[in-house]
Image (cartoon, rainbow, N blue to C red; front, top):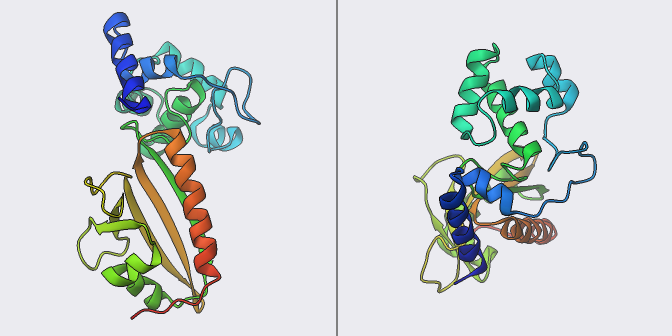
Length: 231
């Protein structure tokens, strides 16, 4: 049994014992160290500033924590909290989602980079010395793509011709084609160059997210310093 599977088993055992939902049981079992810049009692800091959230919703983050705690509470799911915020506090859908994600980050229900389904996502971006058409063509050609990322197999997961193609990530030769989540690649022209943004989704743990954050950052830096052309 892997450490991830063992942890999931512990979460399920706690759910059975306490009646908590998955997110609440998971939060209780994770050791948390408040990051730099987080207010006292916060597990992690929201991406949206206190001033911005107050300007757009009428309340700062500490107020929202108290409001949601007194409403649906920490055992509620993401969708339930967002709907309650929108319905009871005259907050638009987008800002209700922002409040909910921030609340989940502050209380530890959602860790940095964690998605509503419990998986994690990371993103890295860099401007490359390639024109946009060349950069996009490199991603679509199987041989070029394999040469760009040796040791990994990126299997297409989206329709041909989409602007932001997705690829299942696996070690070359692995039995599971989605062993390491899904990579979405976006290429945007910047003058005669291209900004490439990699968003790696469906990662199983914070450790996996940190690993791939570093991997793709180094990969983009190496790509930016190389002379690559499409076949």
